Length: 82
Image 1 (tube, rainbow, N blue to C red):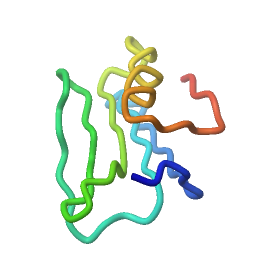
Image 2 (cartoon, helix red, strand yellow):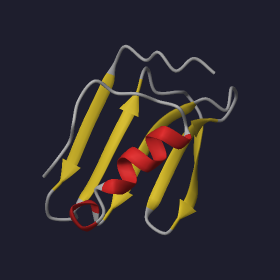
Image 3 (cartoon, rainbow, N blue to C red):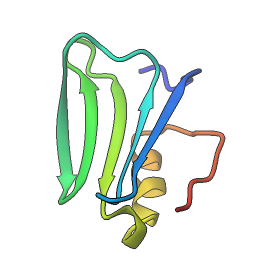
């Protein structure tokens, strides 16, 4: 898996308190795993490469972003707080 992504898209829905970060070009087909309630890891259906992470109730659980980025071995050059 290539973890050197050059493009990051960050979306935060304040009303829904949902943070989503996507990495690189979106795949044609994808699926999401939910390793714990309200955390979604999106992967390319063909290559199984991680393409995004989403976290519900982000304001209450910002630590989950770093936890799951570390688990999937992805480093992003920013800090996110809301």
